[in-house]
Length: 463
Image (cartoon, rainbow, N blue to C red; front, side, top):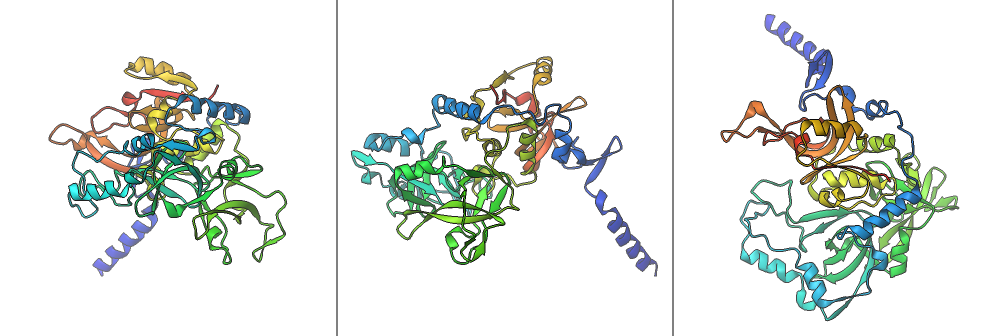
């Protein structure tokens, strides 16, 4: 009987106490236990937006944002204006582009933990079909029809720095979203891969995920008006049993699609009243571009035109990704740290570069934080406004503001260091996070330095 009572008491205690499991107390406020100094209220965008004096003030107009994008095109070498892309590419120049991706000299392993050797790399290099490159090569143009990966080489093989490191595929470069235009420059020996140039990256993409069209049609697609922008993390087009190409297609934050002004009352047997009727790129059996009608329920998180560029909206957009797992290069349908910032700002019409070092060189109100003293950083952060982009080598973050004497950010990161779990070498023990999360800038890394210590630049994207 005593044992039964003990079991019942334990079950009741756990049931009523469940809400407190995983939390500790900081000054009488519940605190998330896995990231220090972050209270539960800080996990809500409204907490940060309510602290702003100018949350809804428009920072830049659409025309100013377009001008800003033009300056990025002109100043960042890695960004390419496809509107002015040449119709042909010289063979030597194309080979040099493809050869930018070199066979790793350090050990690499496959998904089973086997060391990759010369036989693997020789077969991979042969697949690039360099012998098929001519003296002059016509550029084709296409649109991405489903989210796809851009790779260093024409393969989907998982390639790791060390066995078991499955979340970091070293051949993954970036992800491309639906409607993204590409200049197609070359084809792999098996015909399954295209080597292409997107606005912010070039590499190998699966041919089945790209539809080839006329240059003007492809490049005009992303400029057509009126349009909607996906403002949710991920949404889907509506189910359509008559057209599988447009049915339940995943669309990521920032995707822009033309919307019909005067849609029909009924399309594919469904009333259109409760939907936005959009144009969606699809691919026929021969790989050619066909623009089809698709529907997006009005209940989905989308905007007619870009969102107003305000500090409140920057923060609201960031928190829509909170808790999403970190995804190196976006391989599995999510995003990494720099893609997080790129996608947030894309909902306002910005076309940011893809990588952290390129973003760090952007225009705006910039603050150099390299090797600054604590006092100097204090002065800079007193001026810095929430919504600013923060950078350190290899990492991008979004500034949220100050609570008490502590500055906070939201970012997509792998983890942090814990001095209570020091290694024999003296490094801090690693605490995994691997998601979009709120943290203080005083959070330590495994080398003992804080994120604040490692900052190199802060950028407020405004004129």
